[in-house]
Amino acid sequence: MSEPERENETLTAEKPKRSFFGRKYKSVYGDQLICLCALLVMGIWRWGARAAVICALSVLVSMLADYVCCRLTKKTYNFKDLSTVVSGMCLGLLMPASVGYGFVVFGAALAMGIKHIFGGKDNYIFNPACLSYAFLAASWPSQVLMYPRPGEIIPVFGDYSGSLYSGLESYLVRLGTAHELSVADIFLGNFLGPIGTTHVLILVVCGICLIFRRALSPTVTLVTFAAFTAGSFLFPAYDNINSAMIIELICGNLLFGLLFLANDPQTIPKSFLGKIYYGIVIGVMLVIFRHLAHTEASFVFVLLLANAVSLHIDRFAEGTIKVIKNTFTWLRKSAGSFERVKNEAQNDEEKTRYIGDTQEIIVPLMNYNMPAVDNKVIKAAKKPPRIVKGKDNVPVRKKSVFEKLIKENKTEKENKEKNKKEKKNEKE
Image (cartoon, rainbow, N blue to C red; front, side, top):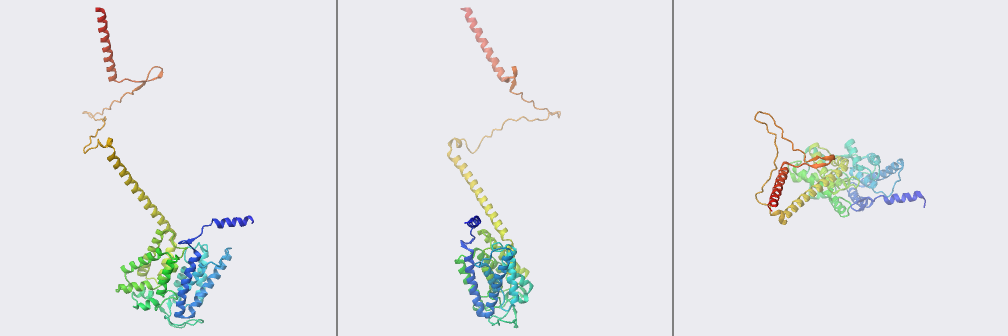
């Protein structure tokens, strides 16, 4: 084996495996692709083969554009990479069944181009399908945000010449009202919308399956859903709160985007607390965009803003965790020191026998420079140093006045005793 091959093996061995809830990205995208195919089957049943052609064209153009971008950037194209296929399927299912094929081709090529602008696979910041769809919706709303009637079979070839209508979200944000739907119409998707976003029952089943397959973040999904539901309840679109909340939850791209766009493994935060913050940001901003900005297709614009701050949300979550840990350690240490002092005071008899209700406080004497009666300040005399230099510069301790008096008394006593002894000796 040559040296370059050994170096490549060591690099591949040292490179950490990227996983999502303990699963490889390839298997996660595979599960998402199966659910997207189930939604495509429902779209074919409702609008005919044109829905399949739109999704197939989006996937093929996405793969071709990804291959061309890899060749231009001198990267190896991996045919087993399912993230490109999932992006193409998501973009196709977000389109209405009456959209022109040219818009699908342009959107798929734009999605892969944006993906490689940010570094390609495993490096992009924004979800490619979401960003491409947002550009198409802002540029050509008459093609992307207008839908045919549900159940109308659309011819595969040629432009659609029938009537197009605005979706439920358009009525909700512009007129502040919507048509009431029955339970069967809601679950079967008998209302205006894109190819793969109106089938509520299939979306709910797909979400449950993806959660159990660990191909979906339940934290991001449930927190976003709860935050948006609470905001819709506090700020209903019209008087009938129950009907308004149901319409707001099923209209637009909310359920589809929440399952397949917001849970992209590349764009969501990595920490648990970061995912909670991420869901709260999406839910609150979605309420603001719908009720204050009156924006149609609001979920994709909100998700792009959330993707832009995803990394900062992760860092903020790390800072929050550090603050919480430091607070708990401080509380534990303070509680431990209090308990330690309390136990020492209760158990140590030598220390506790002097402790009582009243305690004598001894204040040391201090010399104060007080002004005299004639307003003259008298400086306090400094005490002479106790150690002075004697003979041959040897430091000698200077005796105080009391020591001198004591020495003089001793000498006097000694002299008296000597005198007494001398008198006794003389008498003898």
